[in-house]
Image (tube, rainbow, N blue to C red; front, side, top):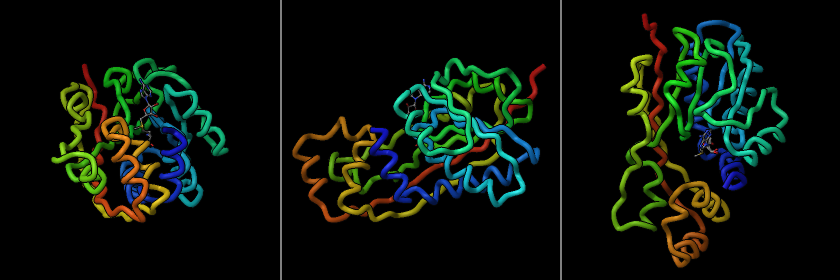
Length: 225
Ligand SMILES: C[S@@+](CC[C@H](N)C(=O)[O-])C[C@H]1O[C@@H](n2cnc3c(N)ncnc32)[C@H](O)[C@@H]1O
């Protein structure tokens, strides 16, 4: 799954999302020196993008990636990026309280209490989840009717420490080349929902055209007294 995700992302299909995340960080940054924690960083694609973007920027990002998967963190480490990497759970982040300026969560589980604990007051949480049309070109081959993924914004929306500042919708259409279709399938939960026959049919396609659709939400950690 991690290798499929890495190959797929490295081919630039979600570049538009990476650009949106980088723009959000530039828009919200509080200090020129800041610590960014990618919670559920997987194999490190977004850390890598952020590290590259920081080279030409005035912001000095101290990058930290955390993921529960040792295999994911190992792949991230092989990217040789300038980041500290941690194998641990989003529900038990081994960092001091008030130590993180920006937390990032892209399609990953998030614990509101733990995230609030490590974030500085006024710190920013950037959370990315799927839009209603995300990968409908893929799911059309698997389901009669597309059921949009809910994402997990609700737990943050209901938490007293976070206030929603902005929601940015990111939408595009990608043409996935034949060999990359199976990687796309494998990196999603849809892999477990499709039959062997559907897998074969998808793998035999020359290309797959699909919308990609994301919501990027920017929250601020509010003061509580
Ligand atoms: C869908 S992947 C997203 C990975 C990466 N953010 C990306 O978009 O490429 C979800 C990630 O969450 C990680 N994960 C699952 N449960 C976790 C937990 N309790 N704590 C930290 N990471 C977790 C998985 O190992 C996986 O890397």
